[in-house]
Length: 474
Image 1 (tube, rainbow, N blue to C red):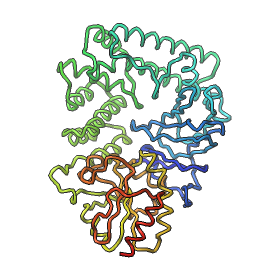
Image 2: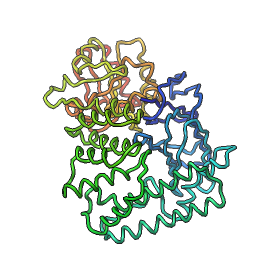
Image 3: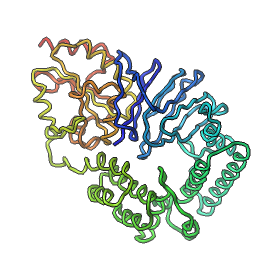
Image 4: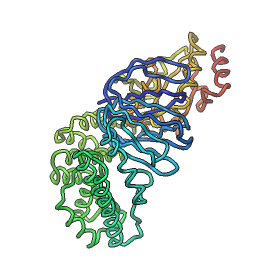
């Protein structure tokens, strides 16, 4: 699985959730408040100017359909460096709207504080035109193409209204593309990709409510899908078109909510190549999110059919790990997994920390408040350096790769021996038994292995140091 590492070159501490980056560990310099990666060869660099407002933020969606946590810009000029192996879709959210664009590995992109001044790859006018197209399109049409504020049909609309509104919007977007290309140079590859994106958004706008069972199939929607079916659905990137079409075919066959197994079989026959890989991956991912009984079988089938090595590795590492069950286990036998794949039970963990005070930090790679508190945890850890106290970080991430990749970005790589993930993530018996309903969550375990404080104060709270000092003296 490729690794993501980011560099934050400013006075704020940020977090990046990333599934699509190389297994590359950059040299790091540890500071009390943040981690700075010194070297980032071939990195993708995002440079935000100083005029961004405190409310501005950005996030991205990666090749594996995962969405990152938001990066708050805090009104500062900030440089972020990433190592991406695959394209990502970047979303910049400002008061004047959302800008989105596809970022390629290794690019350096400059982002202005206003959509009007845009996104630039210095020295490459064609690429800058491509980066600004969707933002320019959104401003011209008045409706955003993708992201939080994208157009969505209403469940109360009639099918004919949904089709008519979506068709009109699609035609306006195509017309604007033609106009934009007369003024601005675009690469052939980008033109092909953006035409496909515009069509996919159109198809999804019309079909999504029906494909997912929110509205019943009727003759107008069946006529639309059968008419559009002759057009190729190219979804080699993240896109719901093939999944929506598969759900439609399954609904039409079964006249009821289809099983994921049925959808998998339909997609494996209906599509080919990269489109089939993407559709099948989407179905396996749904099985993972729903924790269905068919997850293991579908993951194995995907491994045997798919040709996309990135998707296969990701599915194997992240989805196959959750196919076991803790339903009949006592929570003391709930399993933790270390970054190197070593597995131990909660009971084993407690035994390994005998005669030591343990301060446990329950967190997740997608949890911005958790990441914001990390520098305070590092300060607290330094305060008790050399004492019989252990600082342990346990993630509730469902996605194993998300957790492993985030260890470097949050500064936990040097502390691998005290890093674990609940093997079943949010479905772990341990999380349920310890009533961890919100994170960050902290716990203090005494030298006798018993929980002293189940819901302890945060590292930033002065009371935490006082409590730990008292326990060390007992």
